[in-house]
Image 1 (cartoon, each protein chain N blue to C red):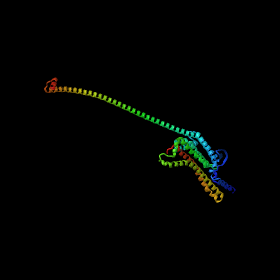
Image 2 (image 1 turned 60 degrees about the vertical axis):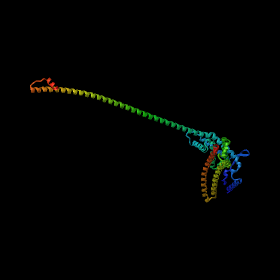
Image 3 (image 1 turned 90 degrees about the horizontal axis):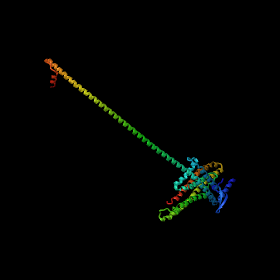
Image 4 (image 1 turned 90 degrees about the vertical axis):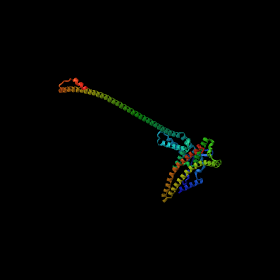
Length: 176
Length: 249
C-alpha cells in the first residue's frame, strides 16, 4: 500500500510539472545538440567510408556479370561461326564427292561405249569376211554345177546319138 | 512501476556539460540512446563490408540496404538525386534504429521527442531548400508559382503552395513523433491495466490475460509502425527532393 501511495505521488508530481515531457522546452537544446552530433557522425562515416565501398562492390559485381555475359555471347558467336564453317566444309566435300562420282561414271560409260564400238567393228569385219567366203563358195559351187551339167549333157547326147560332143560345144550352146 | 504512461518519455539529465546561447547542454538518457543507435548503425554497416564478389549473409544485408535506399531515390526522385543517398540512408537507418531500440524494455525512444523529430524534419526541408537554390538559383522559388496560369490565379495559388510547403516539415515531425508516442502510451496503458488487475487479486488475476494479449498485439503492430515510419520519412524526403530537380511542374 505504501508503494501505491508513492506511485500516486509520482503521478501527481508529473501532472503538476505539466504533462508531456516532450513539451518541456528546457530539454530541447540538449536533445538537438546530441542529435546533430550523432546524426552528423553517422552521416560522415557512412558517406565517406561505408556507402562508397558498398556501392563499389555492387558496381564491381554488375561489371563482372556484364563482362561474363559479354564473354558468353562472344563464345556463342564463335561457336556459331565454327558450326557455319563446318557445314560449309561438309557441303564442299559432298559436292566434290558428287563431282568425282559423276566423272567416274562418265568415264566408265565412255569406256563401255568404246568397247561396244570396237566389238561392233570386229563383228562387222568378221561377218563381211564370212559373206565373202560364202560368195566364193557359191560361185565355185555354181561353176562345178555347170561342169557337172555339161558332162551330164555330153553323156546324155552320147547315149542318145552315139556321138561324142566336146564339152566346149555344149558350153557354147548353153551360154547361147 | 510507474502508473504514469508519460513517464517513459521523461528525459533524465545526467549532468550539465556547458552552455550555448543561454541553453544548458547536458548528457541524458536520450543522448545515451542516440549514441547507442549511432554505434549500432555504423558498427553493423562496417561489419557488412566484406567486398566479396559472392556476398555472404552480412554483406548481402548491407548491399540490400544500400540498394533499397538507392532504388527508393531512383524511383521517386530520379537518378540525378543519387548524391543524396548518404543523407536519405542515414535518415532512414537512424529513425529505424531509434524506433526499434525504443521497442526494448528500459530503452529510451529518442524519436518520441518532438525536439528530435522537428530537427530531423527541419534538416530534411533545409536540404531541399539549400540544394534547390544551389542548383536553380533564385528561379527555384518558381515551385511556388506553377507556370501557365492566368495572372489572377497566382493570388490564390502562391499562398496555397507556400502553406503546403511549410506544412511539409510540420507533418514530417508530428507524424513520426505522434506515431511513436501513441504506440508507447498504448503499450504502457495496457501494461498498467494488467498490473492493476493483478494487484486487485482474486478473479481479476485471470482477467489480466486479456490486456497481456493486447500488449502482444500492439507490440507486433509497433514493430511494423517502427519500420513503416522510418520508410515513410525516407520516401517523403525523396518526394520532397523532387523539388530540387523538377522546378517546373
